[in-house]
Figure 1: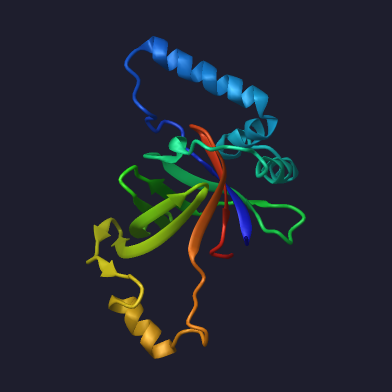
Figure 2 (figure 1 turned 90 degrees about the vertical axis):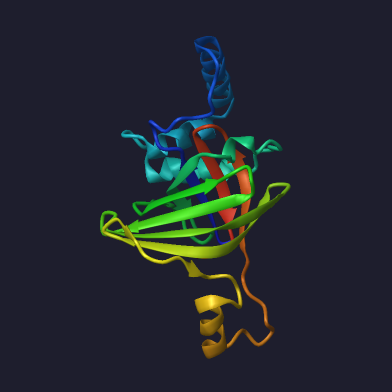
Length: 203
């Protein structure tokens, strides 16, 4: 795996709907109990807040929480996740991320990854499907849509071997063994506000 990253659910975003104040209070109590049992999660919850931990604290918490045993990944679904901190395997300390990006994994098997540049003046939106096997999620990117100053441009087919991606592959050629690095996340931890994953796509 190339790096470990933490993602936060932006504040103010609606979470899973509850039918009554009592149920909302119970959900908040449950999250508080889980956080109390996981000091690493408590540190990572602050990464996307106005009072973040130090890079050293976040690095330690991230490296320790990857050993968490978790089988329920339902907290990942239907929320917008923003990357906030990452650690590369050969780095002594991780770094906070300032890129304007959001990822969303829907229960119907689709995902989106939005990246904004120049304060949102230029926005790239990748869409496709994913398959979750255990804690590993494999992504298949299918479409790219670009927005310039809020104006959407025509969608581009970026599936492997097709559209503009197929043209680039034919011009540049593939690796000698014909292989490519897959887009895979191995999830380590997830609750309603923060998730942690190992990635294989590099950087």
